[in-house]
Every structure is written in structure tokens, then in C-alpha cells.
Image 1: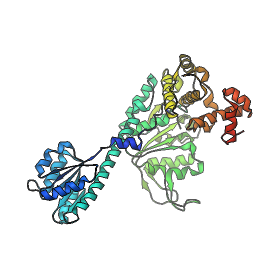
Image 2: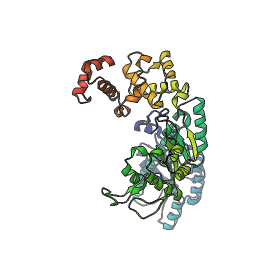
Image 3: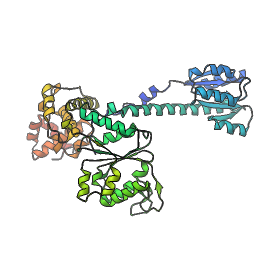
Image 4: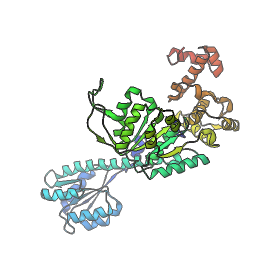
Length: 471
């Protein structure tokens, strides 16, 4: 899967922060012409400290106060000035999403049914338990209000996170062309093929297209074809029925179905087996699927984005990729430039990765000195952005200066680091991965490794004793 063009910082929207963005109280308006009942109603609801309760004795008083944007309104269905269904219509004109609770002195299922069709949250009959029921319903409705607000906050955060100008980093002319092509794909459902060298960020382009398109609220399902064992690809993509093969203990929904109404991203499509290619072609032609072991055709609706670092035309010529599938897939093509062709984007990306790593590991920030910038600009980056990210993060561990120095940069590190480094999440994990690499290069000579890394032997011995290093 392609590496980040510039991975956005992880969301800092913690539960506490989220709750701070929600209303401190729920505005609850009650319109009730029975003055005695109105007093009891206000007292009861005010027992919840999160409720800001206001009572009105006429519908007109309520309507004149709707600019205060209440979250919940309780309505007496038989007000003297405006009847319930008409009042509901007038409220909806100003506040389409407000939660409405209707209180009635008599049980009339026909009236209740018509009110529910108007979008009323609940219909409550007046009796000796009315106040308790209103209390319970109002609290449940308040929870729904908070939930709606939470969804709105999270949706806004997602939209900001995947905004093209912040999600994908790059000011070079080459990247501006990429942005222009991405924008052209957003308003349609055309298939998109993203090409480029490994590590250029093909997966980010796929996410940017999805989260800025009309399907953004639907699922985004990514599949790295090269990472799935050959014998499991069919089940992974198409799903299977219970008992369809040994080990199929329950029904499983495949990736095509998971992407219902959303976007399916098939990364490294050039690695797909010819047998699966034939089945994929049928799926794309018919837009329906049959699970492994099943006999029911299931209709599909998704947008397809594929990515590859291979030349698919050449793969077709050499018989490794089906020609008919190639033409079915191609659609709109976006080619990502290698990092070495992006000029000063290298420096802006390096600064971004440095800032991100410092914040993530609670380390003092570091700037790049002029020599380190010059070194980066001259480097060919065969590993593209993935390599740059590894170089910058490693320099934080090895460097002892206040700035990132050229001497701290292991410019070949991305070509030789093992998978443990690429999966590291903490500062200690990064450190152990680097020590392990050097230790292996030095035939497990701890003294030489400590000298190479300019660190104490005791640290290496401690990691070995704890089982964190292999020796």
C-alpha cells in the first residue's frame, strides 16, 4: 500500500474535548395553557441540571421565542389560540430538526398516528403518571440531541481531516496537477486508477477522493490485494456462506458488500491472480455478487478506485493481466510523481514529519539546519515519502543536537529496515528496531553496535535481557 504523502495528525478529539463541544445544557420549551400543570411541569423538568426550561402559556408566545433555538419542545395539543397540527407545522418551518413531544388530555390513536407522521418524537396522555413519563421521554430525547450533535462534530472533523489542502501535502507544480485531477473525479462516480512508485501515497489519493465525494458518508473499504493469501482472496472479496468450505463456521460478508453505496479501493491490483481477475470482471459487468458457496445474486453499488505501481499495459502484453478487465478498470488516471521530482516539497514534508514525530512522542521540536535541507534535496529517495518519513524519525532518535543535522540522517535506512521498524508506534519501539538492525549488521557484537550508535552498552544489554532484542 502506498505510503503517506503527508499523514494528518491523529485526531485529538477525545471524549472530554468532544463533550466540551456539545451544548452545556438542553434548551427545553414547554407550551401549556393549564397554569398549575405548567408549574409542576417546569419544576419536574428543572430537576435535571442539564435542562434549561422555559414555559409559555400560548402558542404565539412560543412562536415568538423560536429564534432562541430550543432543542426540545413539549406541546399541549389543545391550545386555545393555535391547534396542535397547525402549531407543529409553524414550528417545523423555523426549526426543521427540533424534537417535539405532544401532551394530550385524551387518548386518540388516530390523532397520535397523524402526529407521528408529522415527525413528533412522542405522544403522552395526561394522567397521574404524566410528569414521570414526560421526565423519562425528555431525558431520552435529550440523549438523542447530544448524539446528533456528536455526529455533526465528528462529521465536520472528518471533512476537515480529508480536505485536500491539509490532507495531502505538496506545493510543487507536479502536485498541483494531481490536486486538479482529484477535484475532477469528486463530482462523478467514474472509476479511478492511481499509479506511481511504491511509497508515493496512492492510498491517500483514494481517501481524498472518497471523503470529498457524494459518497463520503458511506463506507470506505480498502483492500491490499498483494497482502491477502492467494487461497483466501475469493472469500475476502466476495464473502462466503456458512459451511461453504472447511473452517467456514459462519456466513461472512465480503469487501464488495462492505462497500455498499460507498467506495472500494483495490490497492496493488496488478498482483491479482488471473482466476480472481475473471471473477472481478463479472462483478464489474453485472454489479452483483454471489458469495462462495451461495446461490443468490446480491446487487452491488460502489465506486471503484484501484492503485498499482506496475505498468498494467505491459502486464497485459505479457499475459499477466486480462485485457478486458484492464479496459473495464481504467477509467480516469491519476499518476503520482516520485518524491525526487517534487522539488521543495521534500523540505515541507520533512518539516511536517519532524513536527508530527515530536508531538507524538512528546519530544522538543527540532528544525532542519541548512546542511540537512541541502542533503535531502540531493537525495534520490528510491523509497519516496515512506523513506523520507523514516529518515526524519530516525534522526530524532540518533541526533543529540537541537536541530536535525545531516550527520544524523541514515539515507539508506528505508531500504534495509525490517517490518518491525515500519510498524513501530512508540519511541522505544523505534529505538529497539534501529539497535536490532545495527546489531545484526555487526554480527551481534554489542560493543561495536554501541559504538556505531554512540550509546551505552548497558542499554543494549538491558534490552537483550528483557527479550526486546534478539542476540
